[in-house]
Image 1 (tube, rainbow, N blue to C red):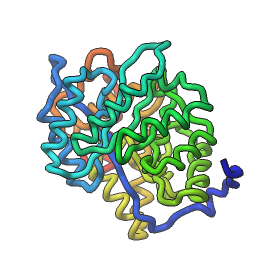
Image 2 (image 1 turned 180 degrees about the vertical axis):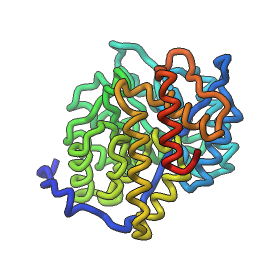
Image 3 (image 1 turned 90 degrees about the vertical axis):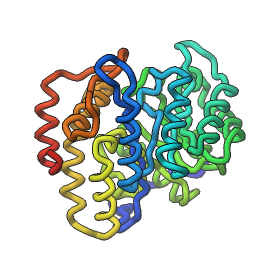
Length: 318
């Protein structure tokens, strides 16, 4: 790996840079616990219409709670709604603590996404988290052979118990894999993401660092693109914010501040509860009919709804 680049965040600001935005699509449920497929399809459509790339089957889509049949239905319905439009999707392999890495299952999950027209995001699991650091580059190089393109994914343990942030030399190895077009970074650490941006700029400028830092969504100012759960709440407002940045429009800053206030509230500890807040916000907007999360998902206090309503008013959508 090349020497670690010197960090200079101020010098790395990228005014007027076009931003590639991806929004993790929420998977709504009815009050009896069934998946609200009509609501899901409408959210996919709204995301694409706003100009963002829908990201389905992610943490925001409760991928760890879905059956294989439901995963296939998510992919099929997404393809049908978009009619050939682009999307990305989590390639998740369910396993248990102590499980060994099973590359064949990951390859099959990635190929399934590609067969439906999407770009797979290699979702972490217990087996992948157990692979020693020194063996991770070879593991990803093998998985790359299953598809034409894929996105890596660093997910911190504050999101899931099997989360893992890679050492910087492992991240550098991802940049050497041609099929890996980018990687989502969800450590919630600005410094770690700045390190990845500096490394990217020095070695492979076309590689996408997709910020997953819902507590610092202004990382786009420094060269990150994004794949955010927070963007599920307001793909329309994120897309407009991004256009303002590209145009040099000062309205970017106040819109970013208001969206960040929503992110700071929704993504407070315990972080997994953010998905319930996303559901409540979407229900407040009238975009879904029920915000109840599925069985097994974290819940927020009822009082969150009043705070979310005030945040929606600040954003002008309530």
